[in-house]
Length: 431
RNA sequence: UCCUCGAUAGCUCAAUGGUAGAGCGGUUGGCUGUUAACCAAUAGGUUGGGGGUUCGAGUCCCUCUCGGGGAGCCA
Image (cartoon, rainbow, N blue to C red; front, side):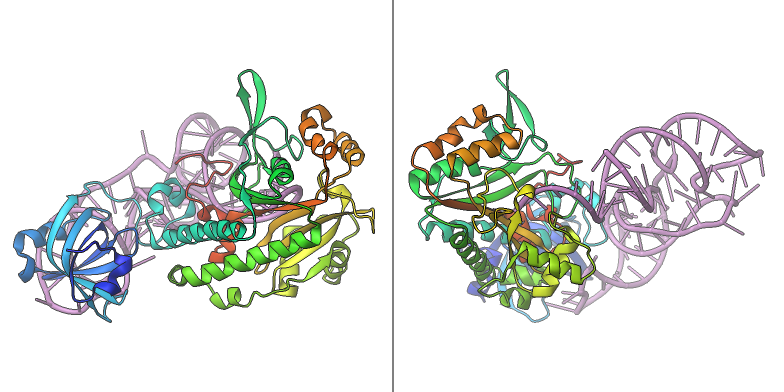
């Protein structure tokens, strides 16, 4: 008997194997049972014939309810009548755990509120499994790309004393009598890391207490934040483009089955190619005004605007040269146009919107200190960060990519809450 | 935080202010190739909580709680 998983069914044709799995669905037809079994690696139809397994076993299996755990032994065969192309002709069956309660999740007709309440069980379904597999591939390809391009994993702390972007959207906690925060970005620490190890990145959870209720927001989400010493904003965009293309390539290579399960339009991903258009904020305004958006200098790019932009280009688009008023203190002012900063946002197509925000960082000591004060922040808490400009300051750049937004785009799903195992939203911390 | 829609069986939803319903799921039975199977029978309800209007409220009004969608902000 060989070690077997459903994902390897095609390697075991005409062989006897044992599936250790769970009952996904049972259909009966007199003296034949069709049991759809999942084992975490995939789904397969198992055929149980009464005359082959005997009366007692047959009756036991017949009355199993959804998600009972079982061990089926039998021969793997190719069969076009099976939805998965393969099936098992069961000869022996062992019940590991017979479920006695009614299983809450049916094969159809559920609202998202109900499913979220049963997230711990919802993740067993084919679509959720596919999404989480793609998330894992996205994360792994991020690490592989960065590690292969001279980046060193350099983890930022989760508990912090200083806040990168003001204090409005932070989760606070009591840290032995002192006020501390859950990290909403690891960037400042990455800047310190880049001065020590040249190219670094962190990949971990970040926390925003914004009371956002949209398809693009979670209060806890994962972000990869690379930071590069001796790197300007243009080179940073090259890296961002390379990373994005690499993730797409890997997902297309390794997650074909999952994309099909999700009915993703794969051609749209295959069509993404280098170079991504780079468009200045000012030109984006003109474009939007052609669509009657009535935009003037300083206005934000909203969700609706992003849809217009992505329809116009049908490729990821970099928006550059933002007005400095709308951006955080650490972004470097442009010397060519002091109204703007050397930052860029990458907009994904198909209405997915911003997936990366990046910038060249302010490396001038005096300018940085005055910007910190201008932002109403206390320079004392940022002393260690200011030190980076006192001791060997160099041009450096970095960016942050949202893992869930990237995954949602790959999957073609409209809400990012399904791209993380247990989403934290403003109204839900269970399960 | 604001705007908006909603809450009826385990789930998805019906029900002119006048008897609480269906499909799916559950249970029981039937069927040797089912594809979210099908057929038959059956159990299952304090209509989210509180208050009000009315002869009479699932339905109208007030309020609270919870949920969906959206805005702002962002990744």
